[in-house]
Amino acid sequence: MVEKMSALERILTVLEGNIPDRVPSFCLGGDFDFVEKFMKSPYALTDEDMKQLDKDKISFRIPTMHAVIAKFCPPDRLPAGIDAKIDMCWQLPNMGLPFKLDTVNDYVTNSGGYYKVVIRDEGIPHWWYAGPALLTKEKIEEYWSKTNNLRPDESSVRSFAKTRKTMLNKYDIVVAQGEPGPFENCVFGIGLANFARFARKDPSYLQQHIEFQWETFEEPMLKMIMRTNPDVVMCGDDYGYNTGLQMNVKTWRKFIKPILANYVKIVHDEGAKFILHSCGNLHEIFPDFVEIGIDGVESLKPKSNDLKMYREKYPEITLVGTIDDSEMLNLETPEGVRTSIKKSIDTLGKKGGYIPGPTNFLLDQPPENIVACYKAIQEFGGY
Amino acid sequence: MCPLYEGFPAIVYSGLWTLKVYRKLEKSFPKPIKVIFFLTDAPPAFSVKIENGDFEIEILNDLNDPQDLDGLECDGYIALPTEILYGGVEGIKKGIGEETVKLKNFETLAILGKLFASV
Image (cartoon, rainbow over all chains, first blue to last red; front, side, top):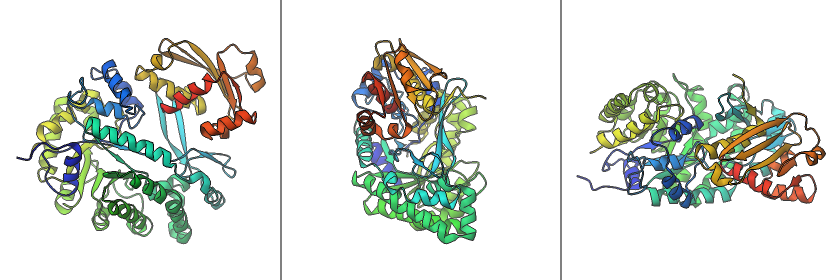
């Protein structure tokens, strides 16, 4: 029997392809709706919890909600903890302040897209990507001239690294920090229609834009993150729809794969592990993930992916996520969640290579189901 | 579905909402306070009233000129263009020096800082 491990030992053991003391768990974060439900539930953070978390400068920000994730700790870490341990979560450093483009006559983010904040009629905030701003070559080229606005902020990266260390040392939770990947940064700015059009009719222009983003802020940000010595880096780049890739696989291989391989190399060169978050069906590019050395792939909604096949065919890659957040965790009873987790671990986790957790940010799932999910991972995750 | 707020009022609302949902609003603002925020290039202006761990936002559709802020009853206000707001603390300080920011009560800046830090 393996001795009890810390969360970091557990996560690294799995990502190295070995068997840890038990199956580790993961949570991407949670949106405003989930935090509201959680804080109205019997599991809500108590005044005593808040006092300790404030003292430790743990972030309450949404959607990373590290304070809520810490609440799942056992009582030896947080006295009123739920004891449904989450071993790893996610965080993206600030990607810079919005800036104005004259050709767009509006403020855009570093990818060249719009984000919108809306307060819904029931009073709950909602922040989300609202569309691409760089819809013409004129706009794209003005964006290229704004390198000063696009440079990442190292002070934000250093500040987030402090948070990461506190989460690890005080709460035994690994924070996988990272940044958006090349596809998301590209299509958030120019839009999927332009991406497809340029890929077909003007590939060198698309290449130029992707390389501009890599050189101007993706590579510098990643190198800043690596200077803070993370153990695990997780970058988000949604390639899939429910039924397949958002683009032709040849297009992904030509334009995206080389840059993604750069991400992996920079992270590996500093001795850290690389996890990719990507929603949707990824079966066409799983062999490429193996080829460029990705250690883990996260999200992996079971209805969109043949997880059993991935487990058998690609043992090199740790499967992260896989617990259906939109139907199972939303609609099942806590007992049904428990049964489903047991089944997932039996199918995917018996030989290691598995870090289960909800497949995306927690949205409107009942908090009791989320607690049942993490308690079941502890209950059935022993090796 | 019609949103309650969009734009800058929604950003400020998000900060207040986050503090409230975590029961941190009263601790952050122990005394009742009313402040007005006005992005001069992106109206409307709006007032924020914080009291007893709760908050209210009122959209001030009739306020079009920063000079009119002086006639309104409040503990503080800030009127500034978006580009100065997105310039961060340094940008706002510079804006005060250059008089592109109209400010009553420096505490208004601290309130804005607390709300931005929580979102």
